Length: 380
Image (cartoon, rainbow, N blue to C red):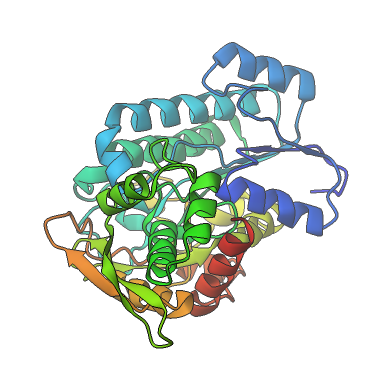
C-alpha cells in the first residue's frame, strides 16, 4: 500500500476498526475512509454498491460485524448469523466488482470446533461440531473465509482472512449484557470497588456514561443497587473501615466455574498485525505456506488459507478475574456461579503460520489489563 492509497475501514468506530485506523495514521497513511452506520448501512445492498462505485477504494479492512459475548450470541442467534452474512457478502462481492486491490476480512477463533486440538491450528476448521452457544456467528465467519477463498480462486482477487483470538482494548464494549468477558469483568469489578469504598460519585458517573437498562446516575440509590445486583454486583450493609469510615462488603459474580482457559490479545496489536499483513503478505504467499494443505489425489485443494492472530498464551477466567481484582484494588469476594455456562474449556490459537509470516505480539496480559483499566477510568 502507498501512503496516499484510498483505504476503506468498514467498522472504523469499533474495537478493531478504530485500532486499525489509528495504526494506519501512525504509519502516515493519509487517505482513509470511514462511514458511520447512519452514513452507510452495510445491510443495504444498494447502498454498499453505490458507495464502492462512487468512492472506488483500493484497499479494504472488513472489521464491521455484529459481535457480542456468550449471552448475546446465544440469545440473538438469528441476528448474529443474518447480519454478519449480509455485511460480509455485500462488502466482499463489491470489493471484487469494483476492483479492490486487496481486502482483509476479520473473523474470530470461534470458527473452530468445540473439541479442536489445542492449540488450534488453521487446518482444524470444519473437522467436527462447533460450540453451540456461538454456532450461528461462527458459521457466518466460516462463510466469510470461504467467500474470500472462492473469489481468490475463481477471479484472482487478493483477499486475506484473519482469525483473531479474544480481543480487548480502547473503545471496547462494556455493556454488561452484551460485552465480552474481559471488559465486563473490568466494569463489574470497578463498580464493586466503588461500592466498597462508598464512592457513589464514581458509581453515578459510570452509569451516566454507560446506563444499564436505562438506569443512569440520576436514579435512586435503591434502584442503582437493584440493577447492579441483577448483574452480580452485590453489597451488604455498611461496616466500619480501617480508618473508621464506612465501607460495604461487596461481592462480584463471575459466570461459570472460572476453569475455562482463554487467550487475549491487545486490540492495537491486532491492528498492527492486520496492517503488517496488508503491507507484506498476499494470498499467493499464504497458499505457498507448508501449513496450507495442497494436492490430494491429483486435485489441487486450497483450504484453510486464513491466518490465526493471537499470542499463543492463555489464562483461566479465574486467573483473569483475580488479575483484574488486583489491578483495580477490589478487596471484596469473587463468586463463581457454576449454574451459568462455561462455554468451550480451551480456545488457544496455534500462531505458527503468523510467526512464519513475520509478526509476533509484544504486550502481555498483565500490561494489557492495566492499560485497559487506565483507559476505562479516563473515559468515565
